[in-house]
Structures are given as structure tokens and as C-alpha cells.
Amino acid sequence: MVTRELQRRWDSLHQPGLPPGEIIRGQEAQPHSRPHMAYLDTLDADEKSRCGGFPVLENFVLTAAHCNGRKGDSGGPLVCEKTAQAVYTRVSTFIPWIQETMRRLQP
Image (cartoon, rainbow, N blue to C red; front, side, top):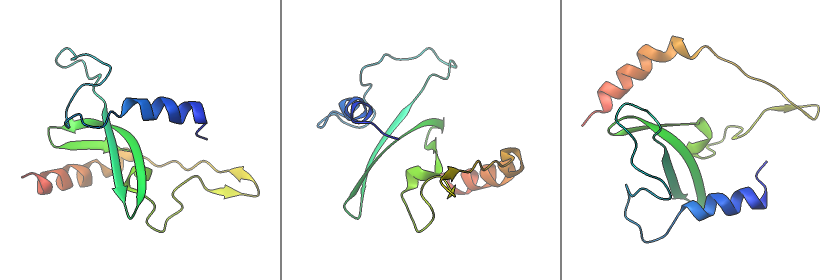
């Protein structure tokens, strides 16, 4: 659940007028320390979306699935009888597909 305070803090990270790639309220990280973070602010069919992720390659940012908007799927947790259900999958089985997709999409 997003509270007003959390939304206010998240909104404060986005500063209109700054060019993409700027470091906002942070500092440049030491190489190979992996503290990188990406902020995505998108507008799709008049629906504004904010999401975080982290770079896995120079031109790829890994985000949660809900960051791609609601495309007819649940777009949120599955709720059965007023209880959120846990859904787990072994991500390692998808690594070959992920790597092939990233290779295919390289410019």
C-alpha cells in the first residue's frame, strides 16, 4: 500500500527539467560496487507510472513486472477470500531466455 507520505517522498525524487541520467540526491558509486538504481517515470495512455529498477547492462534496466503497466493482467497481488496469495517461481530456469532476449535486443 502506498501512503501519502511514501508518495510524497517518491515524488520528491523526480525533479522536472533535469536531463535523463542525472544523479539526484546521491553520489557516484565506486566501480563494481553495484549500488546503482534507476528511476522510471512514464506516461502511458494518460496514466502516470513511477517505478524503480537497476541496470544489468548499459542499455537494460531490470524492474518488477508491474512497472510495465497493467495490460489486462492482475497488475497486483492475487487476492482470494480477502487474503493475498504468494506466488513463487524459480527464476534460474529463465536465465537462458533472458540472456537470449538481451542478446537479440542489443543495438
